[in-house]
Image (cartoon, rainbow, N blue to C red):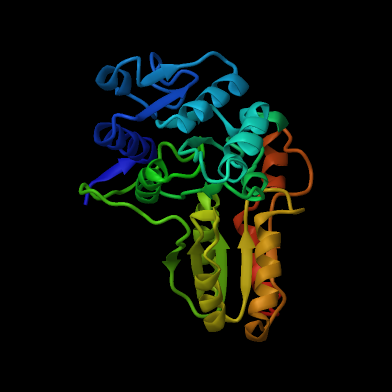
Length: 326
């Protein structure tokens, strides 16, 4: 099977869907003439022209509203945010228009739109450009929220998202665009709301999503060296969440650690921990552990970034605590 970069997988997904359906178009800052801030839309302007690959002003509120209105009138926009930090300027449109329109119109208007772009820390970008908002958007009925961790999932999930009749938040990472992975050449779709079993294990279940999966995989390797067999579940979707697969894993390992790059309060890991203690309590041999960002704004200094974000050491220590080895 061929190996391609994460950015190329996204490009293929959008291009294939634009060839399949003339109502699909891409809009956002620098997506056309510049080929995308991270070169995700490389070559798409040449193929599809300026009517379907549209450069916008630096005005997220405006072009997000334009995209929502277009979706209500029968087309399927893909709106790219250079980073989801900038989506805060447009959050009223996303939450109060896109997410609620189907309910407010009594089913008369659906909003088939994808909002995609980078999320989270990407190095020394400062506190205002390094935040995670997966849990913010997952808190909103009417939205679906996807956070792929590898090129194959990125392509299959993005194609599904573009075809979905509901608004979808699709979160990537600047630090993943150059990652390579095996991606099928044939047509395929990945259903929304199905997690992926990344690795089988017997002693502890590690649950995560997005680029933090790299940290989780490294931690599992370190635990293996100490005789601890970790099972890894990649959520892929944080609204809806595949609770059933997680519970099935916990029935086998009897321990759970949830790892995410977000602040701890009202987080995805907090929701999961509540759900698991309620519906899988009898299978747990230890308290559920969480590894999240420290509860502070992300600073600029590399040493402080390392201390703030989830890392391998923190995951390994959490796993040992669940096994009463630390």
